[in-house]
Length: 202
Ligand SMILES: *Cc1c(COP(=O)(O)O)cnc(C)c1O
Image 1: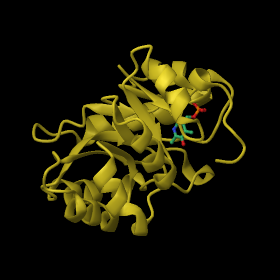
Image 2 (image 1 turned 45 degrees about the horizontal axis):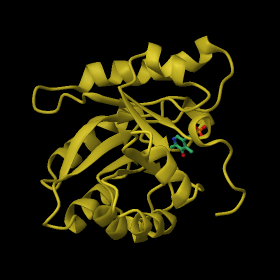
Image 3 (image 1 turned 90 degrees about the vertical axis):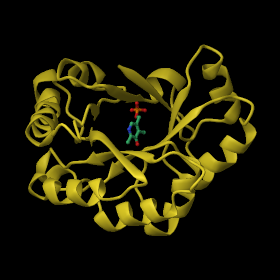
């Protein structure tokens, strides 16, 4: 189980404090904010995961400044990240975001389109497909929370191959991490439960 400390809208000092407790993996949602903080934390060997919404005009910076991207759902973005990944860096690890909670959330690829997206990503030599990611609509009771996570796991079971085992399930945030873990999460993305509430403006 990997813990991604989601540090969006948190200061470099706050990240430094959490890294002092042994945390190495940090998740960020806004490219410029992340790049600015990374520059202040160069003396720490941190692993940065981009968990925000991908915009085409930001892919070059994402490809250069992150080790992982969660939330990839557009084949055009996959091709851009591949082409723009700097040659001196290892392939970019990616988790493909799937819309497993129906009309309540528009982010992520529809399950029916996942095989096509997987095929495109697998053909990109500078990307390494690691697994699937979900960001379901908020639900309060655990059974309702578990349902989209179970759906993501079953898609993983359906589409995993020996060449691409989709070993990572990136799912679960502060309010639904228990449900995600019960359904087999391998990476949870936790912000407020680690850092407290976020600043209103970054
Ligand atoms: C902000 C965010 C998180 C963390 O949310 P918390 O509720 O603060 O734990 C996790 N995943 C994504 C994609 C996010 O944008």
